[in-house]
Image 1 (cartoon, rainbow, N blue to C red):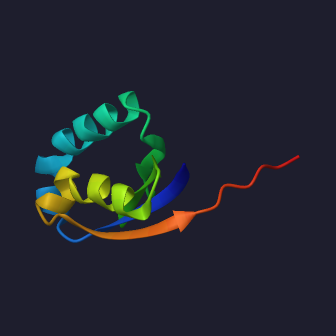
Image 2: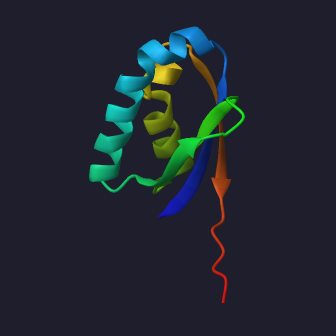
Length: 88
């Protein structure tokens, strides 16, 4: 198991509002399956971040590319493996 940060860069803010309910529903489904560690928008309106939990990069990419925001071309996906550090 590893963490993958999906940066979702805003491409079309107007279309984003229309697709947003499907995006949220998709992420809620992924959370229920144990595939989302964290998610949320950037406060400056430039997009958002989802941290997926997956066994491989390929699995994370498949999950991230199925997000309605990516499918509909509302946001540009940038996916990177992320190493979570604990603070003691």
